[in-house]
Image 1 (tube, rainbow, N blue to C red):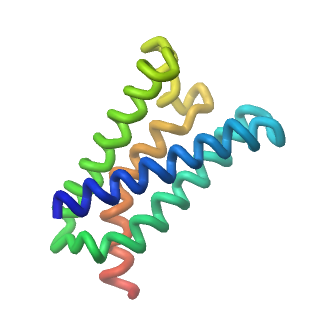
Image 2 (image 1 turned 45 degrees about the vertical axis):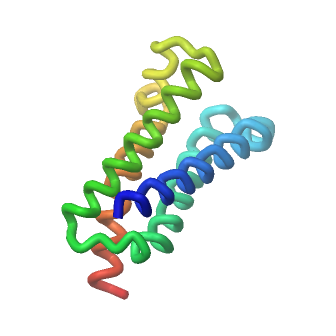
Length: 131
């Protein structure tokens, strides 16, 4: 289960990199910066949900605890990548990196991380109860 979780975590990371590029290259020009961030947040949630919906049966968690472990793994994969890219690729200050997680500053990354953590649990529950 761990290897499959890591592979799908990489796929989620790729989807979020594409989402970030869409936001920067297209949405910033078409919308205000804050509207672009909000739209990108929603697009990211949709990407995560779709990927989770398709691949969670393949990962095959047996219970809710397994789902939380999957979500926690994805959380740390994305947190590590966000910090790495922010600090070492884009040379952002720690303040700016931390601010990116603050919804009070109209940054939705922290909320997205909460969704990422709970997405496997939500999808598992939906698939067990309705599909």
